[in-house]
Amino acid sequence: MEQGYLTLETGEVFEGVLIGAKKDSLGEVVFNTSMTGYQEIITDPSYAGQIITFCYPIIGNYGINAMDDESISPALAGVVIGDLCETPSHYQSIQKFSDKLAQAGVTGIAGVDTRLLVKTVRSRGTVRGYLSHTKKEELPPVKNTFWVEKVSTKKTKYFKNKGPHVVLMDFGYKKSILTALLDEGCAVTVVPYSTPFEKIKAIDPDGVLFSNGPGDPMELKKWFPEIKKISQHYPSLGICLGHQLIALAYGAQTEKLAYGHRGGNHPVKELSTGKVKITSQNHGYVVVDSSIDKNVFKITYLNVNDKSIEGLKHKHYPIQTVQFHPEAHPGPNDTVHIITEFVTQIASLGETRYAIK
Ligand SMILES: NC(=O)CC[C@H](N)C(=O)O
Image (cartoon, rainbow, N blue to C red; front, top):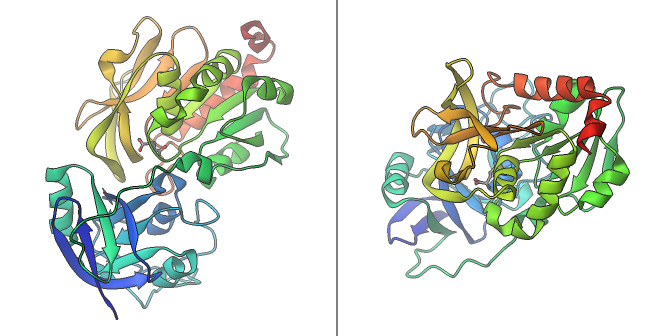
């Protein structure tokens, strides 16, 4: 076992042993509070460029299975864990967690005091970190990477089905979003993030789903006019990055949270019923409440912990957006009805949607 270090840009150094790919790695250090679901988390494309710290102390105990990857390959910069389990026990396990990291070329560090690291990130805010076999005096600068471009599909993909036809705008979608649509009976066309309105028009879908994805939503500024046009012509659902992009396209602003919301137990209040739902979340940016034009959007969900915006509904167009992940994976299914309702809505809109065009 090789000794390894995580050096933060703020100077703190955390010690452990290197696991996975034995190469140096630079990324934004974030933490996830989920108790299970490490396989879905490391394969969620929204983590591209980030080093995830798992708050839950034991990772790897039920191994890696053949079904739960959320993308073809992990895009994250690294993982930090407390206790690594190298003897997984689960009837569906096909691989060890550390072998999955090695295979995907992802560096990890185990045996770290993750409680102290999370406390440090909570007090410092999200910081850059460097994983290496040596301590670093100074961190190299972060390369400006446009992560959405890296994780989005290059080609359009079509999934045949008998129900309404949904275009999935791929900013780095999680497989579970596609699966949720297919399970609802939808035919799905996955398109690259940069697909303009005219091309969507040629596909002629019944609805459009704007996916989750990595990075700062403002990096997609150039596409805001197209996003707005698409959402004005097709019933739309925005999830996480998709929610932020639709809000931005209509003139709202986003800002970075101190250390984000990442986990499977984030309470949000559904304002129409007063009920609290427990949600799966993974985001570092939020839509700024005061920047939302309340004549245009109704706020539908609020975060119970920090009162940040968790959902919007357009007052004139059939557009709904949520900051959390209704598709779960990992996490609770409390809000999966949002996807069902979107599909029911596009199925029932029928001819009326042509009036929107
Ligand atoms: N899961 C996501 O879509 C994340 C959205 C965005 N990259 C953020 O961190 O806020």
